[in-house]
Length: 321
Image 1 (cartoon, rainbow, N blue to C red):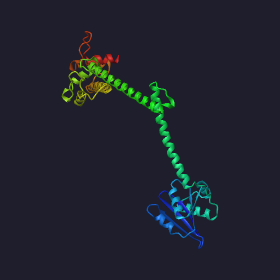
Image 2: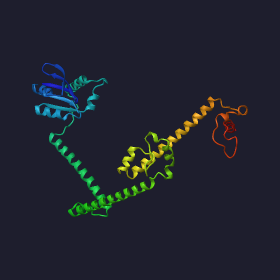
Image 3: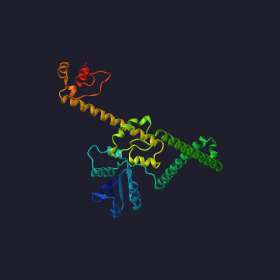
Image 4: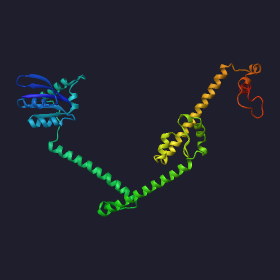
């Protein structure tokens, strides 16, 4: 008789086989690809006892051994592992442990359902999935019926109920299509009303765009000022409707605003650096000693009739105060 301890994995299995007649122990590894496993077990002289741990992908191996007429026992993996005090483990040592438990009659075998019972379980699970799908569809149809004032209960699944719910769905679809078309028409009218370049909302965009005519940005005729050629083509072709046009207009206005802020910051920084490089006075005494600085670089015009408004030195002193 041959007793085999098998450490089964998804890709391979490691064997520790004992010949009770001679006491010889053979260790071997079999790959699951091809017919190597079938050829090995079919050549073994009977009787043969095989022990494995309970794992997920083991049903094909049990079917193969049952087909070849080989007895197989499946053990509890937790109890098998508890029988080994050493923490270090590998495939060959696990196979030898299973063989040792089989020889000593301490193998923790578990109950396994028959093949017919497994097939029945698979059919039951398959039916359960279809019942869940049917229930979900029925709940959706009941919600549609209740939303249209149709309360039929279980009679909704009769021919009369199905015809009524179909009519209700058609009516709701038509109302939704009419509502969408009305919204689209209203959005187009609002776009045409808000689109002219004379609007006060886009005055900053017009002022910014007038200085960039040479870069390919031009003011549209009766549309958004400064928009790109691709945007003009899309809006002219009617591809931008409703919320899309509004969103693009808002993005365009935000971009212009950010550009103006960055430009103003750059101008302020360059003016400050220019003052420092020219040795601008930093005290009241220096402002009195070098009054000619204002004649070299006049700033803004007079403000409120004051003759000192254009003098940077006086402006700097005023700022210090």
